[in-house]
Length: 314
Image (cartoon, rainbow, N blue to C red):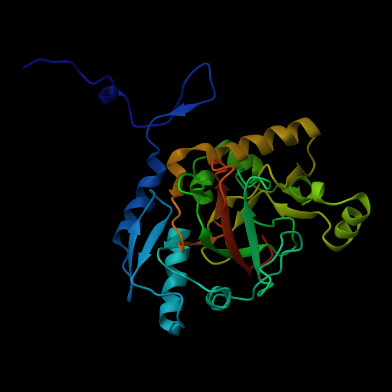
């Protein structure tokens, strides 16, 4: 019996350009293997609900306000490496408990620019309201301008607006894997200059900025980073902190940074987390970039973050 044929049924599953624009449409087929792998994973002592195709898992069955057995910490570390960012609900952490949990995964860093919790210097405090807007709504990884950037971060939601204030995360492995072979070859050995100035320089006068540059000079990091534990490659540039690509003209550099950063716009590479009071996000800062939505002004949003020291990027 005849009927109308779905025009998509005669098109090979692939990404195609929507001319005359740069937008790509079609199934993101390279995600399938990782999506199915994550669906088969199991962990002892807790369960995980997959959130995005290749990124994000909601963990249930663990109380991170209490001391954890070594075996549970090891399983959570494995879970983090697999899902890239994991989430917990109903975890009313005190500042001390927050630091204690994060410290189970490594040494904690002190952020030189963001104000800290008065009780725990390892916790940076993001306190936004009508007079203090949120400017974290750009895709980025944390502190690539440090010689040793953070490996991971634990963010605790303390006060959450009734509507808005979500955080989105992007799988930068998937973003790299989605590049053409020609682009992968072009960027394979490139390095980039990363600097704090665009994000934090406006908060300093000239003298203070110069002093901080003495302490935290611009760093040279790979454009394509290899994760120190998984061995996977990922895009490691962003518009917030990457100043230039070494060896390229200003125009070429800006164009390449913009193109590589724009891979975070692919929704299929993302997951999005809707906060509730005392939710916790724990992300692998080497594998993901994040974007804090600034759609709640002038409502109040208070978060605290502990960051775990990583390794030199390569």
